[in-house]
Image (cartoon, rainbow over all chains, first blue to last red; front, side, top):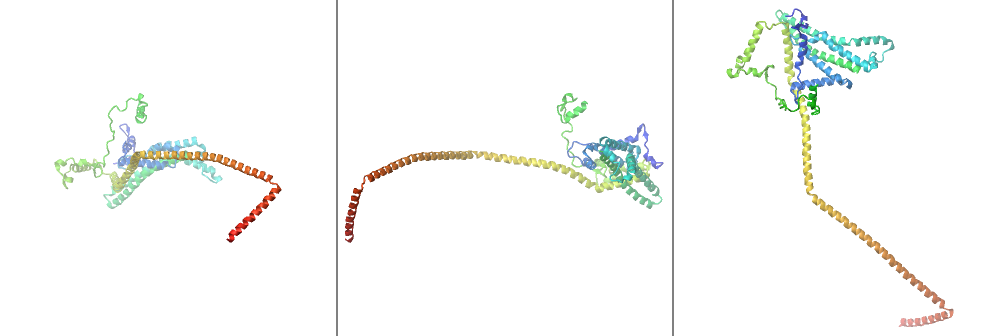
Length: 227
Length: 255
């Protein structure tokens, strides 16, 4: 039994192997390899359909030059969705609850979009710092504010994902502990808590998928701005 | 580097880079080609996870009836025993994670039971659309082939009647030639007749002119020889002749 609720977020190194590496590599096994069959199985068809539709959704508003990022962004999305969903099972570890893990995705990608914007179209990139038709008095303040908001983007991306998942996992732990403790003393309250736990599970499944999609959607938006 | 070239040569540049490939093409019998056909349905499972074959292990020994399936099937016996062992020896500890896991499991099972058939139907529909597209292409090709076969047969039938066509054309041409010949003949005749008519008219004109000239000349010479005296004599003679004639005619008339 865990001593405190934060032991689920530990990243131990067991016999020289950091276990987070295994936890990061395992979800890849749930994907199917592309086959040379023309009519594929149901799972394979659905997987390809999911990938194609999400790629189209993400990249339809983007210019053709930025379609080079498609592989990176969609594979990131699938990776994050799988990791998040697998972490909802009991006794599993979710790497995306670690801030370092998420910042490692957010910071380089955001920085790449900013550098691309500054290199290819610097005037256009700087123009994003000032919204259209602002009153002249507000211009200096607004530029400072917009710069801060630009610089805080990678932090926001990483922390959003981390916080959502960590909070969700903690909530599940808390409510299931409450249910576990109360089931011998006040079974009725335990049943109500159980209902709450069910609803929370549904929410957590939704949050796991939505947060990954939002991460990737925001990256594509930053890309659209700068390319 | 070599492996990349082999890959490249294997896909679509067939023999272009074969010189540097570390293995040739088609040197061994092919594996996984042609593709083995995909099974129609997935493997049968019971309770969603356990394959049906596990339950069939001791059927030859234990036999199958309605209740013996549950009580005496090896799988259920072993499964129940294992579960009870894990729980009673606290190898699987029941703690708060169990409840979290139960909640998640019930959500998953509910989702699969409720939306499973719909998702499967959607996947099948995607595959069917793909097949239908290919089928349309195939049907179009077949139809166009059948049409072209029929057209070919029709052309063959048409060539049988080509001798009739040639005869008709030959007759046509002969008629045209004949008509043309006759026209020219007609034209020639007309032209010759015109020229002859001209000569005839010329001769007629000449004779007439000669006649007129002669008449005029004779008149002129006669008139010139008439002097006034013979003219008076001839006129009185004429008058007396006329009188005599008038008398005879009067006499005839009264008679």
